[in-house]
Length: 229
Image (cartoon, rainbow, N blue to C red):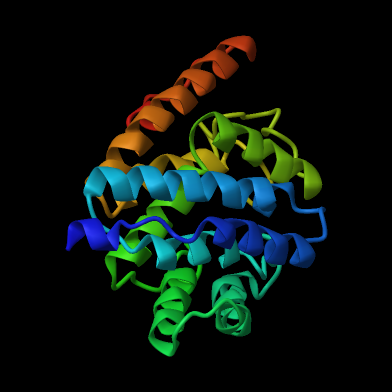
């Protein structure tokens, strides 16, 4: 049964899903563009292969349709993005021949992937996509995405008076680096799968090395509690 669940999707399906996503994105959100979906799909394949489970037909649809709606991080309804994406995915999946049961499965995977939506993943596919999406917020690409998003929102990289919040509360609504200890460095502990946890650890090591170097260039030291997260 494992072999059946891990069977590859139809070769044309990925291109069809890429075309759908490309038609829905406006190009302004570089953190949730087609390249992001491609990376999430690669992460999905790695995790599913290592775990030896997961329906790739369900997963490829969720990987490419999970950000059909991606409201800005400072939007008051940001937490609704994943459920709105799940709703929008249904007619697309019908067009591509997904059954009613498959559509329901994909919709749950999409809805549950979001950190802000706080919807528990109930299937292995939902667990895998959530891990795969969160991995794209870590490592080298995670570093790049942090600054791409903060730049688009007009937020500075760090607080010039106290870069590492030694004497203030973390404020990731105003400073890009604050988002790391507030959320990103904690994602490893939230991974669902053993494979996701292992991949997250590798990427977080790189991010902490970056922080150590950044602190050095700013003439200070990284607070021990940042390195211990």
